[in-house]
Amino acid sequence: MRYLPFEHIIYTTHLSEEEVMDILSRCVGQKSGRIFRNSPVKAYEGCINGSRFTISRVVKNRNAFVPRITGTVQQVDTGTSIEVKMQPDTLIWIFSILFCLMAFSFLIVGMMRSDQDDGDILLAAGMLSGIYLLMMLGFKTESKKSGQFFEKLFDAKIISAE
Image 1 (cartoon, rainbow, N blue to C red):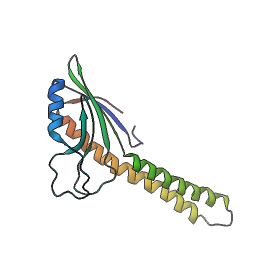
Image 2: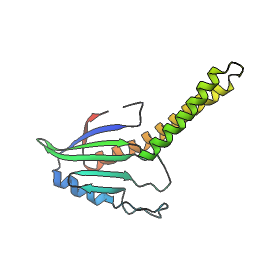
Image 3: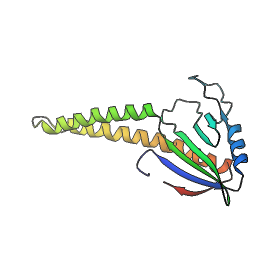
Image 4: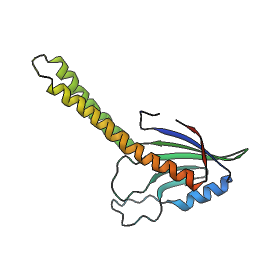
């Protein structure tokens, strides 16, 4: 989904399912509640349950748009398939929707009032554009880093990306 902050990628690798899960478990640490990290021990944090995982990339700075990555690993004829879905955290979605509703209401009120100049409409349109760009740039930058990490980590090829 090119214009939305979602990614659905399917990788294929020659490694076995057990090897993939072992490599993944070495890169994923337990989720810590610490806000400031001195030095990350592992590249990702989250949980792994059987052949499923829910992780997010550990960053030194505070980037609210780091994607939540869920995935499944399964054995296929040619090796192993790793299906990965990336999306923003639920709290980010709630904040973004509330902010957009507020900006959209300003836009509607500005359009309905004929005695106002176009400044209100431009301000509301700018707010909508700003939150969209902020979310997309923050999310796509981080999702690209995670996608490249998975490709390199598992020596995998992308067979499907949406």
